[in-house]
Image 1 (cartoon, rainbow, N blue to C red):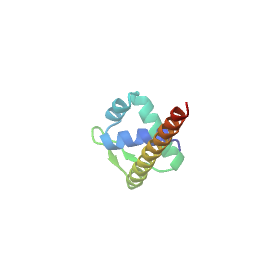
Image 2: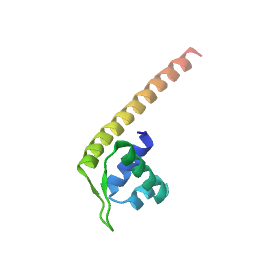
Image 3: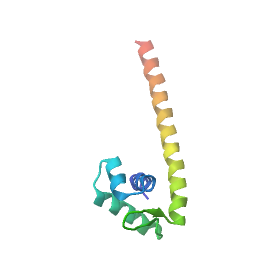
Image 4: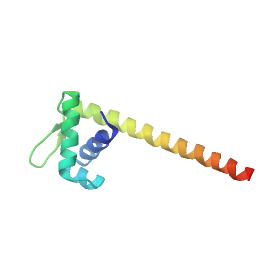
Amino acid sequence: MELEQLWIFLAVAESGSFSRGAKKLYISHSTTSRAVSALEEELGVRLLERGNRVLGLTPAGQVLLEEARSLREAVQKAEARVRAAGKSENKGNADEK
């Protein structure tokens, strides 16, 4: 499972549409569809209920949505911590000059 696949799944699940999810991420509809299908194939479960207009989550999809949101939050925290550490490191280097 790749983070990119999870972010695509999140965009689709949160927007309720492959098209809106793709638009949010500035990628094509087909790329979005392929990424979610690959994720379903890898996990061996259906994540989304596909229909004409309405897109719903299966029970497995709901679990993945919750887990992916937690992962997104953890990634955002890690990015913030690394940036803060880099800023303090750069400040220390500037003070030495």
